[in-house]
Length: 106
Image 1 (spheres, helix red, strand yellow):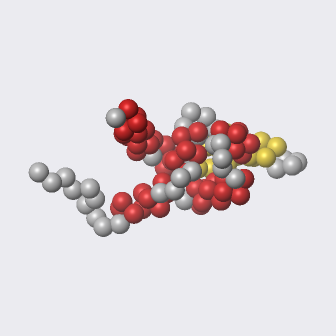
Image 2 (tube, one colour):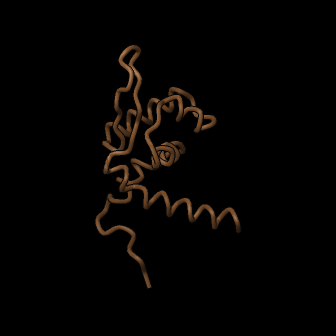
């Protein structure tokens, strides 16, 4: 029996355009339970450069997966949080984590 992965061409690619790099799923994981500042994300994501984190956050904001709220005007400081689109990705991330758990134990 064959299981069809995508009904329309390009759907899987659209998901990979959001989740298809090393850091993005981890950023989304860290924003699952509560908003986080740039510094909090930087500490949590051991090994990520500030430039890479900034680029990923900007891209996720442009894709409307996350949004930012200013909490300090001078200097400008932001907290990042998942949008409704970002929250919809949680099921995918949970399945990835469950697969990883099974794979690591094997």
